[in-house]
Amino acid sequence: MKYISYVDSWGCCDCLKLSINKNDEEKFFELSNELILSQYPFYRRLGLIILFKFINEKYIDKILKICSSLINEKNYYVNMANSWLLTECFIKQRDKTLNLIKTKTLNKFVQNKTISKCNDSFRVAVEDKKLLKSYFLD
Image (cartoon, rainbow, N blue to C red; front, side, top):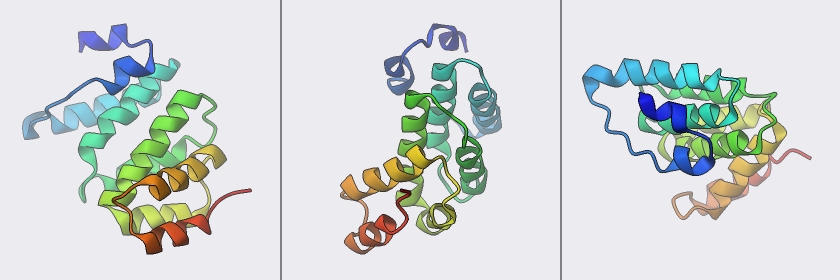
């Protein structure tokens, strides 16, 4: 993907629209994993953004493992993408994502921002918003 070499801001990551057909699914999932390991923060962010296309039963465990592996991430834009991704995971795969949040093993910023984003979402039930608040990290 030639586009990747031009990624140098959050806007370049967030405006990318991907249509991934079944034949290319694994290739894009692998690409996202490679990008997440990059030394460049916006490549890492792009890797997380690609994972939005994979929030389903087949990939949720892998996505949650990737999200939790970024415990030492310091870059704001990568952490925000991780929080945003986890919020979507919570909305689409609630139980598995809640189990991860309950462990309190995420990066503190990501844990708290994910809960905050869930709280702001109209797609998260009021009862879940109350429950999630109990998992804020001090």
